[in-house]
Image (cartoon, rainbow, N blue to C red; front, top):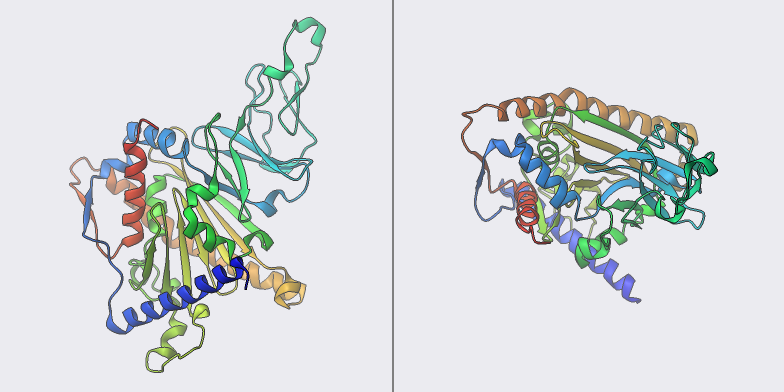
Length: 398
C-alpha cells in the first residue's frame, strides 16, 4: 500500500470512529464540549477599530478561499471580487495557473473590470484605454508618445499572493507576502481535504449576499449545531439532530460530524462493520472564514468576509459543488432537476430563516447596555473560531 493510500485508509477509519462517538452522544443526550464557557462583549461586532484590525491582521495575513477552481476553469476566465482590503481579479493564465491582481489601472485608478465574471484576453481601462495582459503586465499606453517616458515594467497590475490547492483558489489580501496553503492548513486538515477530490467537482451554483451583519455573526451561525431545532424547526431540524457533535481540534481549523436523523435506525441496532458516513453531515471549519460541509452526495462551501469599511456589514457566499450527471449515473435532465431543487431549498432556508435571525442579532449587539455575552461549552467550533481570531489579532509583530 502506498503512503497516500495508507493515509486515506487511516482517515476513513478515524471518520467511522468519530461517527460512532456521535452516535453514542445521541444515545446519551450528550455532545463534545470545550474546556469552559467563555465571555465576550457585543462591541466585537460593531467596533470600527477592531474591524480594521481584522482586515489587516487576519485577511491581510492568512490564506482564504475566494472561488472553486471550476469557476475559472479555462484560459482567460476571470472573476472580480471585493475583498476586505482590495478589489481583485482572479484569472486563469495561459499556462493553467491562477493569478490574483488588484483591480485597478495604475494610471488614474479606474477599475479595470466591472463585470463579476467572464473571459478576457486583456483588461482594458474604460477611462483612458490603457490595457493590461491577463498576467497583469502593462501592455498598452494609449498615445504613448504624448504621455512621456515611463517604465511599463513598474506599472503593471499589483499581484496578490494566490495559490490553487484542493480544488480551491486561495488568496492573501495583501501584496508582498508569501502564501503557503498547506502550512496554514496544517498536516491534518491538508490530508483530510486531499481525500475528497474536490478539484474533480463542479461548482454549479454560487450566490453572494451583502448583508447588514458582521461577518463573524454569520460565520458563527454556520458553526453552530445548537440552534437547529429552534431556528429551523420545519427544515433542517427534520433531517439533522440538534446539539450532538463529535469534534476534532486542529488549531486554526476543526472538523465535526452531526448525525442526520437517518442514523436513528442504529440507536437500537449495532451497526457492526457498516459504514455510517452517509448518516451524518461532516463540517470543516477552515480558518479564518470558511465552512465546508460534506453531505452524502455533494459539498457546500460557505465563505464570509468583512465589509471593506463598515463593521456592521458583511458578505456571505454560498456554493454548491457536485459530481457530473455521468459520474452520478443520472440522466442530465434528472440531474439538473435534483440540484435546482436542492439549491432552491438552501436559498429559502438562508433567506427566510437564517438571515432574519442574524440581522436581529446585529441590531441587538448595537445596544449600548447589552452586557457581556457567553459561548457555552457545547459551542465548540465557535469557541475554536474565537480562539483563532484572538491569536491572530494578538500577534501584531508579524
